[in-house]
Image (tube, rainbow, N blue to C red; front, side):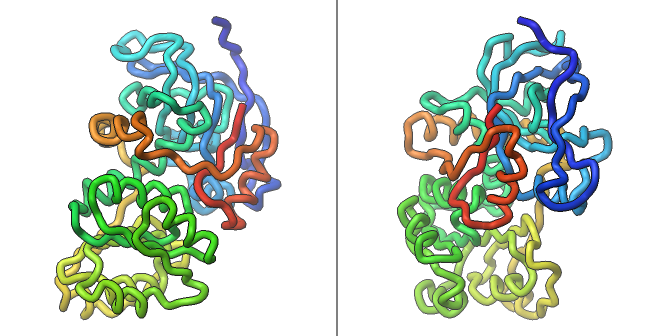
Length: 329
């Protein structure tokens, strides 16, 4: 198999809107001792990609400026200490950067085999959201069967994943979304309730429908949602903050104290290979079989050719999508 010494990849040399994305040539990365080199077939598009492009989410130190946090493809080279994968294996991988490229290198422990029955496009839509939801909702917040779970932005990649996983493990799920159409999509995925936040106040609705409160909340909004989440949380509820799209909060901490709440935060990208490897092991043991059985599937919104990455970013930032957006190579 011939590996080209130079590859096409997408970067944002200057911060700005989608039009600043540039496709140019970069040296093809060489795998280190425990790395695999993937010939990328598809790469997931995520909100952090857009924030990085705009200049507000720089890559961690030592990480390539090439965009992209997840990909799927075929292994074309392996480091001399790689134990699991061989050339020709089909994998999906979580990476700290570099997925928007013809080739992507990743430690083998942060890659997983593609579940049976999934296409490369679907496989590329798995890592970022499944690693995030598993590590926050189940590992950090300890969601249990029978508890009430609220996820904001139910039709986002995170939201569609969180709904399905929470239902698969026996939780009661409610979500917010920005239209009746999106709410219907959430309920089709299994949500027990979906609230159109442009038509109804989720605090009022949930205080009436779940009077004992929500046990676990996954929030990417921040701003005034922080205190509103505390209002609907159950006593000793757990809230995980994974983004603050609405900016900072000036919440009254007395509410957190009275309910003995735990409000924690998490970011996945800067975490080390070993941490992500633990999540990968848990996903393969507990979630990958559910995907192979068809009980959980990545919700696909739209795919774009590699050359139309700017359009993919516009689709993401327009917030009209339901599920995952993917680039194809």
